[in-house]
Image (cartoon, rainbow, N blue to C red; front, side, top):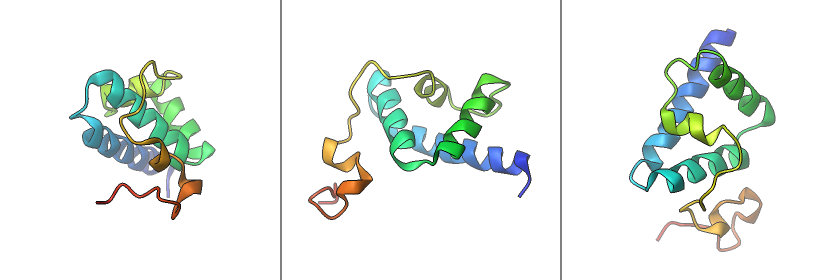
Length: 96
């Protein structure tokens, strides 16, 4: 996979996360995006997306750009137990 197609895939994935959180107030959405990317993306994936955002950032949702700027000011709207993949199976499901 070329570097360009990898960046395109990461941008698409990040924008899908932003679409999910778009119904929340902006600051909560930014926090949710940030927490999701930190919890579930590898450091290499995050670094690639951060480099892309710092350069041109083509195609990247504005909420994703803000989520990559550092620690968010608001709390994520996702319950704490669902933010940590290590808690999987320990009552961390948000289904139902």
